[in-house]
Length: 434
Image 1 (cartoon, rainbow, N blue to C red):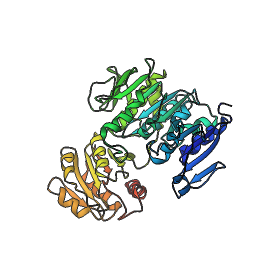
Image 2: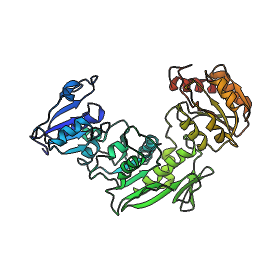
Image 3: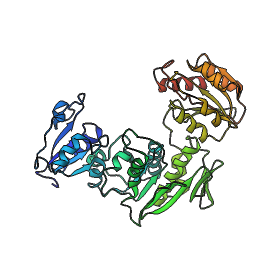
Image 4: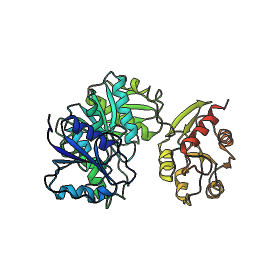
């Protein structure tokens, strides 16, 4: 066995850590799992050091042969540095899994849209007869997949900046860069450090690999061939415009049969299509495969089309940034249902996003009076006492060709137990329309 008689430290008792522990043991290593969280509990028959015992740990040279760190931990935090200070080599869980498999991969990173794109990539390959699974930062860790012994034709690997911090050899035949925006500044000193971590996705690429990058992004793709995509009018190798997809100026298909909506999601589709092209798939077959993909609930989810009006559930938009992204992604005029818990947010900057695209607004929840004052001079506004009344009012204010969208821009706890229940109430109200 590859690691027979070696002793590995696994940092983190969550899914990634336990996946790495299983994989290490499968290859002959003795493993000990460490986690400083007082709530962490043993769930498998590994040796555990948890809570205060982990915080008090003293590591001596020779105690361990390797330390494997979960992505939620920073390698510069006290627990990992106790091992590295004792001369123990450190590797990330994703890198560890990568080093123990020869399965081909598509790697996906970006500030927004990673999970959706990862699911699209897996659905695309599966629909075209190539066995795939979404994994990495998406549900199942890479080490879990490798440890399972299951063989896949292509892995769709979502990879976060946290995972990219600790790669050494990781690379994929197709690596996708979806976008970059401010985030995780609780982990990084500034934007430059966050950008540098994400940029490592292309660090080990060779001339035979392909970097699939959103047009206009400033990231370097290293030695890889660079293919670009855009749904917002930029020059690119693959484009989306007016409901159609194009590659090198040739139309390759329509979005009409896709359940997914919004320009931002069309960019996810473009990136997935280009990943499939790297592996030799045909555009027509890929689009047919994606017709069966169901968008995650409550995320720009098309509920139904009735009288040429699309009803879209974006209940997961619990902040203004998510609401703005939803509005920018739409191609139809909008009647917007917004509101919920009053979190003392300033909605005034949203006024600029509404002009020319939002036809009318319907407000719900405790923040409804404030929203009516903020937007009432700009366009028609109404208040709904509950979700059913809000949907009915939105239909009255709409015209054929419009999208009626629930994108609240705040949390739901004034009326519901979460965004899921709020989205379900919207769905029920929409399906009750005749």
